[in-house]
Image (cartoon, rainbow, N blue to C red; front, side, top):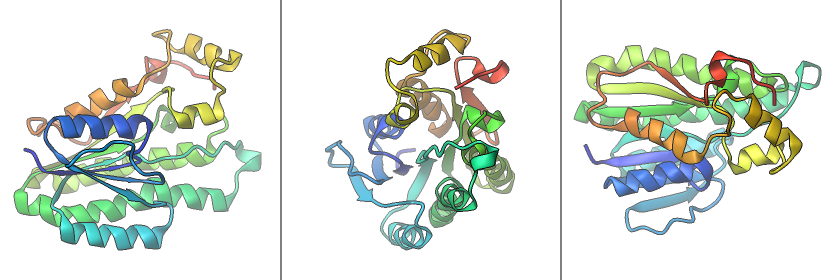
Length: 240
């Protein structure tokens, strides 16, 4: 079912590739991101917003709900704030709670009336292999794990209304966010790739293909699931 699809973090990396694919299948696409989308397309609407700003997110969500019937929501926006337990700070956790958890709640609430009216909806939350635990990821792992709880709960609540809710959890993927923490071409990057069972880092297309599956109109019998797109690192150990 073609319709309006909303993608957060849609201006770069995984989100940008998801937007490209949704446009290619004929959707009207809304991109919400800190930066404007580099894509130019008659069916693309780009908004710049800091989704960790709860008031701004609520205001824009209300506006979008008035202007569009959103039938697909992909919450991809995220940020890593490295910290081991001794260095974790509540204010940093608050930032990631707003971005990773509060924002998708607000956006899903805005989309819900249209999804219910059409008895069709697709919600995909982008978590992380780090949700299973990773040293130095106190803030990030906690909030990315929270997305899995949201998805499983919403899947149960909405299944009878034709709305599916699933999670894609990437492992290390070549994105600007990854390279903000891991220097490109560094020994550390090579060590990470070598530690992944398939022997390489992921690419944005690897993740976008998984999202393609979950948002497809004929994927209505799959809900409440977590798909790790991680090169096998979710069944072994990973050190970053």
